[in-house]
Length: 388
Image (cartoon, rainbow, N blue to C red):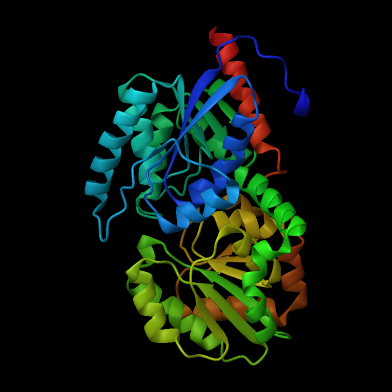
């Protein structure tokens, strides 16, 4: 059988409910869904909350995934408690209808936390992809740090991307036998989409105009959306980008998050600058293309800290803490906070000091080898076989 898969031990495949709701979750879960759907030992049922709508749908379309259940919970300016209540009751109804054997969630969103809690209320085993990330500060990132700790308290299998995340779980008294270091599925996704772009370049041709406009310039890719950076943090980030864009050798490409707390600041501070392109959020192939053409990524995102190093791109992280310290330890990422002065200084160092740049660009990416989804599927099969 393909991929070294063993023959199924039962005629009845295990029904796995995969729950997610945001664009980053979709990117990190579609390789797992592909692997489950290709394996006759499993029946994969997909439920999306649509905590993010437009950006989620872009990934679903590219990955060829049609959800079996869609809660469509996204509402303007929805409070976290209202969102959580809607998620918990909606996901509970899906579980009652689908009657899965196991539930899989990913990461640290409200959807993942509510999915785990709804599964726990039904005494369903819940398995956690990208388990064990910790910043050790419950307000950075907020509310993600508490979300993932809640999931960790209930999970049956913990798929930790690195030894660091495994050790964090063991430190919290999680049974070491339940924790498996698998790598991160985002590297699987990046390899997949890169191969798709090579096969069909038109998938990522939408940046061609900007590539021509900024030809000969050193491109800084920017993403920013963290709640803890709303307000003064966003103002400082905008000020830093404005200063960086004054360099004649540099250009900034910034897919601006749909959240009005981000858009209002960036549009007011950065619109009309010759060396800054404020663009709509990118679908996954075009984001992979941005990673490829950027010299440096400036971000407050978690996933970018894992993806950019896979392509040899240094990452400056606009946060005070990170739940991905492996990148900082390996030298692929550096925490710079949201001070405009610090951001400008750190980017200038990478632009002006080739040795400093190469030290980050050539550092080993600690987050995976592109085989994580295969490992997760085999671990699930082993778990189910031992329970039989």
